[in-house]
Length: 356
Image (cartoon, rainbow, N blue to C red; front, top):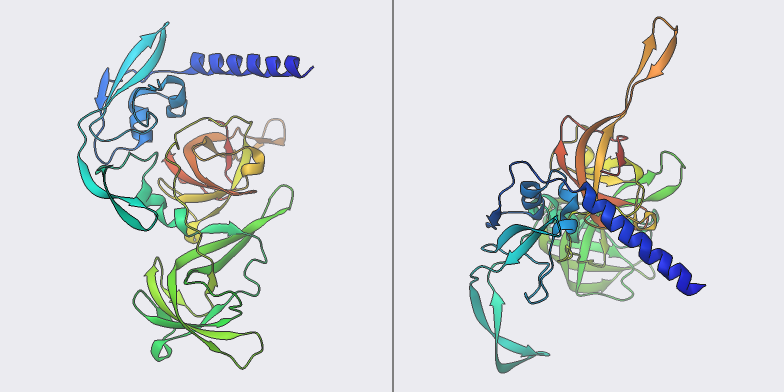
């Protein structure tokens, strides 16, 4: 029975792959070859070749003889060819600059020499648009801030603080850490359809180093002297300390159509912006439990308005209209962060997201 199920799954995978190949549409003005430039993104290059850039995996020809064939660097050449009647992109490595650095064994330097590429692989989407969300802003449990240390003062009693300042926090430092992330409690998100609590936004403020820890007059509490190492925003009183959670984009992150049926909503946007446009970051009520993964591209639809039918004497809802595209770049259990890549008109919270 198990073999029959595995065979059925295999046949389904082949069928889905063939269906996706059949849906690949080349951009009418596509080049036959393209040399990757510094500043390019995978989304931009995909758009050069495809009408629907999220079908990039269907035409990407992995060459096992090329080191890290999934990664594309400035200077590399991409050539469009046809194999069995299907378009494929083949990679030819361009000249790359290297720097020499000592090999490292544990914490000791060894006599070896390592080659390290000067140029980094191109990202899937503009990193400067999402940098703050990669290692700082995250979604946490609604009660995650309860019992965490918080800022009580800056040096000279300042109430707004920044990089290079000394600040003071109070709380339970039972297991002190060398450094902490600074977070500001954001809104708690509820699913508009099911009313389920999805999570709370923890807005990343910066990072601090622990300089000194002194006892407090409140049992179990201490007063910490902290040095501000970096900030993304001004530090305020009552911002909280939490363990640093460093995150970065997966090197194999690429545009892709979701493998599941998508039917969700935009439930939030950074900094409370009301009109959402290109390169804004939005929060979705879909997450890992829904089968969403980084790189998934989704279409955004504006809800059709309800108008009065003066002949029939009743109301009629107009069809939803496609208004943009987004790509998920970070996922949590119940929610995701996505970057708006295209917006034909201003988008807003409660716009729906679906398969592209």
